[in-house]
Length: 68
Image 1 (spheres, rainbow, N blue to C red):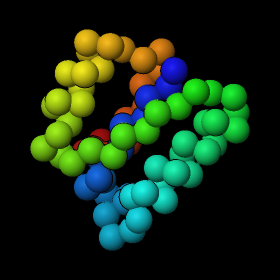
Image 2 (cartoon, one colour):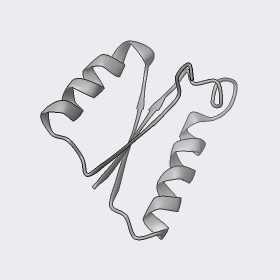
Image 3 (cartoon, one colour):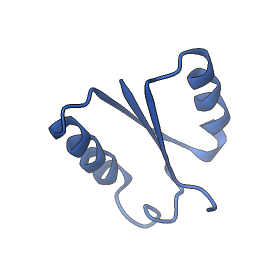
Image 4 (cartoon, rainbow, N blue to C red):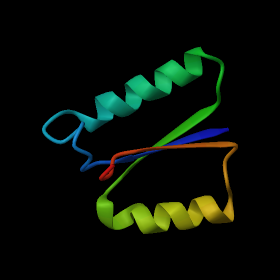
């Protein structure tokens, strides 16, 4: 399983459609044969999202959005 976490305030999605970005990323991984879950997370929810990842780690974790 691949988990994609996207910060909804990431510079690449602010002012755009974060749902479209998430759908596009998910479709690309699915078309390559991966099982994918994608979460769009508010900055205030990132800590909780990462706590869940630590408790139940996916095979692959992709995180989008942040300062560097």
